[in-house]
Image (cartoon, rainbow, N blue to C red; front, side, top):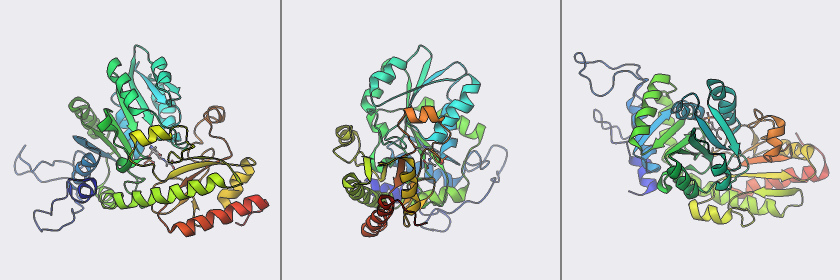
Amino acid sequence: MKFSTKAIHVGQEPDPTTGAIITPIYQTSTYVQEELGKHKGYEYARTGNPTRTALEQCLASLENAKYGLCFSTGLGATNTVMNLLSQGDHVVVGEDVYGGTYRIFDKVYKRYGIEFTFIDSTDVKNTEKALRPNTKMIWMETPTNPLLRLADIEEHVKLGRAKKVITVVDNTFASPYFQRPLDLGIDVVVHSTTKYLGGHSDVVGGAILTSRDDLYENLKFHQNAVGATPGPFDSWLVMRGLKTLAVRMKEHQKNAMTIAEMLEKHDAIERVYYPGLPSHPQHELAKKQMLGFGGMLSVIVKGGAQNAKNFLHATKLFSLAESLGGVESLIGHPATMTHASIPQKDREARGIGDDLVRLSVGIEDIDDLLADLHNALKVVSLGVLSK
Ligand code: P1T
């Protein structure tokens, strides 16, 4: 079965009792047992729920994984991957990650005696140099949030296998439509399903995908033991989003490419970060390991922080908001929003300055999006605010 067909059908057989074509929302906390130990596969809804099972199977099929596990948030998924580790273990992390990912590593798991080294994972040599005898995991976002940098997945897989280290990719920015890290040998994929997978900015969720039996058993144990599981309605919303993932991603990418090209030529813009542009330092790697370039891009606005703020206050269709990956376009200021939890010095060293603006390009009509950005940038050039 091909990707779009799987997104619509896998895990979603018509309901056996009624024939309903859409998987029902099994809004129940528990399941009646015929007698002690005799049940239909479900005992308690933290452990399992048929709506969640359908989503887990569908997501697994889209990432070409053997197993899928769903969570109440993306960070719930990240937390459960961390549960694979023990006190004294060490993790090498690509430094350009979502601020909340940095925060859970630096402010939560460090206190539990897990060590983290943050490195620039655009060069696998940096990852290799950071390895220690107690390194158990390499964690990467690729493309990264918010600078759209890439880690070479195959090189990291080689390194991870040679050193017997678990490799993890947060695949939220690309979505499985544009990148399938497990096909390239990665051990574990993480998603915030809040983003492209849900796709409509109406649900928060997370997922872990793996084909390794040993890791799955451990992760499944912790999914239940820790309990950051999604409710049936949230599972159902993500599953509904998945049905249109393929068509949405094509439009996100088409619009993002047009906007990236326009912004690259614009007088008010210093630099555009988008892996689809030939000027992106890893454009060739993007073409090699991705199936497309996605709908996220970031820009440095000329003239510094005030101009960046004026720009994001002046757009009308691009709404000023956290999050990404929905059908509607969003604009954000990583330094004070999504990445505010990274100390200023570290943030600036990573290239996330106050003049950086991030765009989540939606699937509205491209003419309207271009007009909105042109108008907002006119405001920046004139140095006046419109809202
Ligand atoms: O918000 P949550 O569903 O818990 O997902 C966390 C998360 C994990 N990984 C990546 C790459 C992410 O971008 C996120 C969440 N990001 C935002 C809210 C944001 O605006 O960047």
